[in-house]
Amino acid sequence: MRYLSQLIWFLLLPVQLWAQSPHGDNFNVKCEVCHSPEGWNLIEHPKFDHDTTSFALTGTHKSVACRQCHVSLVFSQAPTNCNACHNDIHENTVGPDCDQCHNTTTWAVNDIMEIHLRSRFPLTGAHTMADCYDCHKSISLMRFDPIGVECYDCHKEDFMAAKNPDHIAGGFSTECTDCHFINAVNWASEGFNHDFFPLTEGHAISDCAACHQNDIFTGLSPECYSCHAQDYNNTTDPDHVTAGFSQQCQDCHTTHPGWSPATFNHDDFYPLTGAHADIANDCLKCHANGYSNTPTDCYGCHKTDYDNTTDPNHLAANFPTTCDDCHTDVAWKPATFDHDGQYFPIYSGTHSQAWTSCSDCHTNSSNYAEFSCIDCHEHEKTTTDDHHTDVSNYVYNSVNCYECHPNGRAGD
Image 1 (cartoon, rainbow, N blue to C red):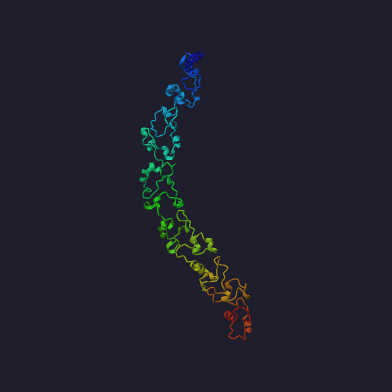
Image 2: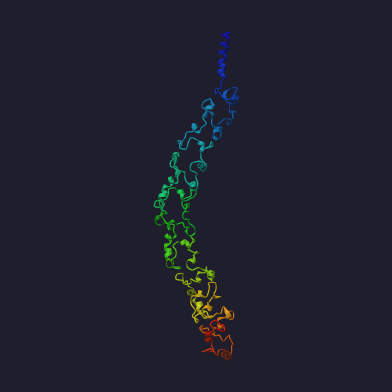
């Protein structure tokens, strides 16, 4: 019985060996998918769906003979990485993943921009128009050796050659993006952050040398006068030097071109109040002959008003030229002449509101030292004489009336 069992085992062994698949243990595809009953040769159109594997056949891979990739009958041993089948002509300068740049349809690269977006240096601005060789000097050898991604790595010659302004003399940073936009199409599109001295209005000039002369870009004072001393010294209307104006230009001016409008603080010299406030914006009303040496006393500006006044006649009366003795800066009238204290009470006592104009008493407009009492006090001379029989040196005239009646009251 033992010999019978051994015989059966030896007879079945070749069958088991013959039945084992040459494609490996884990190949679970029926033979008829690729073979016919007539033999093991492949049928003309195998029914095997390669898409069910981890490596779908797309593009030119569809037309490749199976044995070009499957050199052995154990199909799972075929590599799936590109460089296992395709020689790396770039000599590992771009990595082993061919599908970063290529697809299964063609080796031609048509999406350089998109590829660069995934790289260390996306192409923007003028870089989108650059030739590959401009940066990749070894491209003729199909090599893409790593290059620097800092601006200065490629643009050192541009930096060294720049003269307006001179980047070397000015000690400029080699960080090009400090001043230039990476998205710009040329160097002229400056993006330098000048916020430490805002370039507004009159300062919004494109010529750096206008302020940074001799290519000096450090140590410049931000004070207006440091650049505009000549403007200050040469200004004659008004003469800043003679008037002793502040050298802090911003006290009166903004950065608006032409120095005007100015915001001069007139209160530092002559406060514009009353009627003067109404002409504050018409400087020529007072400064018709310039700004320097303009008088600050009333008479200096109002001499014509003083000379032409007839009621009362200021010249004839020899009135003082200190206008503010009688007038305010609001208007000429009402005046506050102290007639009561200095001469005769006309704003108080019996004469208050008994007159309408100076000429009521001062009948001689050319001489205010003359006055008349008897024009208003219509006493007959004989009657008045009778009342003054006991007054020595009595004379019927206004001067004598005033001498005895300085307050305008009878019995004084």
